[in-house]
Image (cartoon, rainbow over all chains, first blue to last red; front, side, top):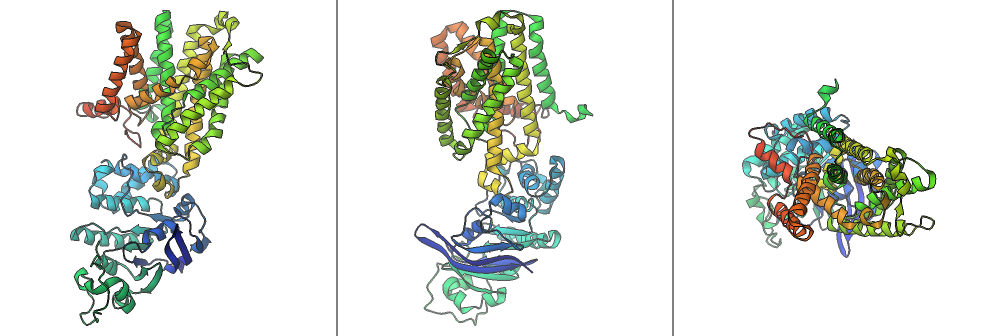
Length: 267
Length: 327
């Protein structure tokens, strides 16, 4: 069953056309990835789905309801939770308290005391329970990324939008994050849409991957096919793909004419 | 059991209000009462201001407007209808809350310094409106000479009513702090856009906090006008009151009700000592220096600083259960 569907989404900022007719679907229970070069409009897409921005044209349907023009608070209550690329914990609150707003306002935990104990469960899930009483601004980057995930889960979402939760993490932390995301799907029955630069992690964790470039989805398939897709290699991977550790066959024809994308697959 | 539901912050509130209420039984000294009257009024204003300014992070520089609206309403109701302060002050609070509802929607679309400036201007506008209302004839103020001779309006009684206002204000602040509502306001203070993606109706919560905060100021104004026996643009609409209230809250710390209360009490005491020791002019300068020093060295306020330093010895005595903590 389709949980999220985007139809012909267009979005411009002044004269800058960021999304030029994006259509995609996310199936319930899947982990769907969305990759694309810097400035491809990935975060804009998340802002549209979570309601922080409005699409110029097109329709967004979530769980059978048209949410194109709904306010963020309603979309959150409908069951869309999200993280932010630049981590934005509530800085003056403790790690535990960071989860309370989502729990009581969207997660259905009306009583503050039950919300507090649920917060500890979620912190346990992301392995932050020992830091429950630390101020969130004192957490490391890796810890803040996990707090972002826990805080998004606090709204008890059906769909979890993860915005570059691997970016800037060490190899060990990426591995841990992959484990965490797989654990979330298994334990919480949540559908996940993640946008990402880190190819290796995306290809490992996702069931399907879409590629956003020049304002449209140029390819959408299982990871193995995506890394072999000529069009994707042309616009996105460039000749630097081997360095990013995406593990494509060495037979995949490197095209000499492909413009160098700066090898910036991780950045 | 009620006892189980009261934490250290609640018990402190009961002690503070109880001790202040006992003062008239111990002394009827005019100086003591008038000093405490101002202290209690400023404490009410600062604790009430903090519901919006501290919890939600929207720092209004126009708080005095609601003191004025409550005061003028209260006095006018007596002059026109002969109503007593027990009635006029709550009605004044309601009118102040209504005014906040009307100006809150547009003003709360702005943030930070823009919100501060707009509230400052709105306060001036409300003053101009109230003092020039046709029929009210209030540009020179309204006086209550006859009312003051009545023993039912004695200074001690009005002082006790003001202590009651403080009690109501602290109770309201505590209810907000402990509830779902407080959690929403803290989230708005920390990051409003994120809060909106977590199901929080930020506009409704902010306007609600503004209305509550204004109504509490209106209540204080309603009693204060009776205590003065008149309302005039100064002090009922004095911009210095707005600024003092902000300073008091920031001085004490804005995470919970204790900070603004301590800030208000401390500033009133320091002000009084400086005036007695050095006279008005010098006192003003030293007062300013004290404030600059506190803002430079204790940017999060006195109470959080004290708590941090006392923590090793005293385990979290002062209202540690606040969701948002102190800034």
